[in-house]
Length: 506
Figure 1 (tube, rainbow, N blue to C red):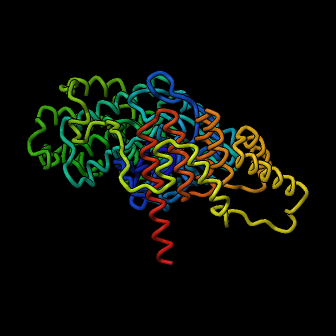
Figure 2 (cartoon, rainbow, N blue to C red):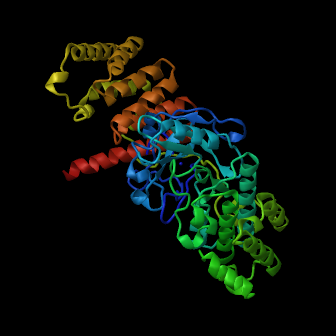
């Protein structure tokens, strides 16, 4: 729900907080799929990756619809210790927001320094970190959103088809390239590398979650998986090293070969017994050559050596795996079996109300008449003020609103903007109607960006208010974002229908 809809990078993990990427097929029924509103932020830098930024908590709260449980993408849901949400920014890009517990990073400076270090990395093989938030006690990370699920989902929980052998080899190479890049940039430590940290972007390309580059807490555990998959040296001294990352990469290679999460000790016994066929995923049905399998098995065996110094480095991983990537020209979405990412135009799917018709026609005069007639009836219940709050400041604020209403009625829209701004800036009372009215004033003054912001603020104040969505639709259309405008118009209409059904049933 909201001004825009999902690309985060999410990570998923059966015991932790890795993000399970949900399918982003646009569904226009408000009751079947909810989309978070979007908030503004920096435009993308070169390569389409947004600039690294510090977000305010209010930005992320708006992007995730007040951190609604509907937008949690951590695989273990609300039980995950560090929740991950999907959200959308005002510039239309999807994000993943990882929310840490208050105790994980008590020192905001340490958290910011760690985030800034990870944020310097930019690579096509990473689901990149694009920002963080350190407001008060809040500690959050913001990353690109990956809409096509995790490697674990495709390997262990597939419903339609398993992941093909060519894609498994591509995953191994791309993640090796990501690790080699991080190592070359002075960030060789990756915490708890596993199949839940490998994500697929909108084009089906595998990427490594940036979340693993940052510790789960200032001094917290680096591994959350079953001890059977943990590097032996970590069990001895509790420290993660570059060699530990290689060990974990070996476990991912085993996952790719077998299609199952096999404990390394068991897999090594099978390898020593020359039972490679038994180790291989039967769903590959012979489409994975024994030559390729032997190379991957040998590399996995090297990565899983007990002594860290006997393991290969990241450059060795790339050098070994690159020759196996024999179909570089075949797009990942083809191999993965997902539709090519395309933004198809959207058309209204429901009969429109008077407000919907006015918005679809961009008839600002008709919208003005409707808002004047509706007055403030939809604001009921949005503010409860104590007797003590009725101060002179409150009276002045309400007087500013009244003057704004007179100017709005008389179509003096610039004066209405000034008066409504006085009311809003005091901040004691939040009125979605005032935001909607000022939004229309901005549209009539040819300021669609400001109009969109106000319409989004109206939605934040009243999340299920159709008018807020209608106004976003008009603002988006004014900004020549026709598909998004049509999507928003559909959502507004769905909310109207839901409200009418609720009224009939009460």
